[in-house]
Image (cartoon, rainbow, N blue to C red; front, side):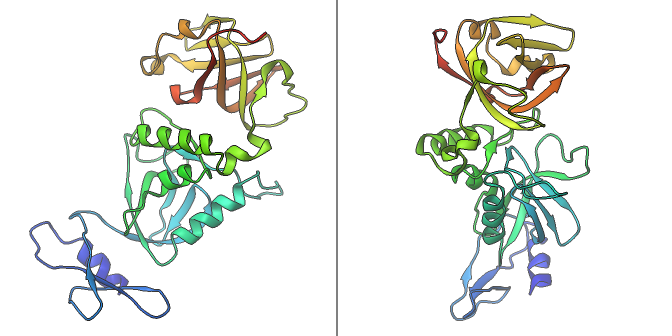
Length: 277
């Protein structure tokens, strides 16, 4: 049946063939180009190709039966246990959700400006036959955070809105103490070793420019850097000075200094218009 489905989905728009779906007593889906008792027609947009999932690595990475490795675009889920490293909080939950969601279904891909990453993985938004937007639903469930890398901004507004709703509702990651905001004044690299995703809050004391970056300075030990090529995505950075912000992203450390690279304004939240006391 899968070969039939692939064949039908590859038909050009001028083809009049219909596709029908039904479920057997075990809940497995079947497809045919002929109507039968209990079968319903399904709406497939011409030109879309559907594939089966072979393996789910973690909450944002999977492999299709044709061998393509897919990295879900615009989001990030916590790491699962690998290479003798323990799982991050919420990592196994996101992976199991994805396994359950993609069981007994095929998926199609939508790519953005960049088709692959430096590891050769296809960067994509994943949709099921039931039109479930997997990337978006992971964020809605609080199992993933938004992780926008320009110029790949397909569905950016929808992802950001979903994250705000999940955070306000305290779903998934947003109720876990491991992902609670950490005040910059209380932050110590010794207490948070390694390359980690964190939320930090603090007062912006000033800006600093270099040839490649503009820096939001929070303290002598911590700053946020933004690549100049992405500055058009941001409002006037001077407007952040004197305000208390929450910033979220991965921490990098060098020579006792901690920095966070931010590529999109969705990773910056204004907590207060005034400095904290």
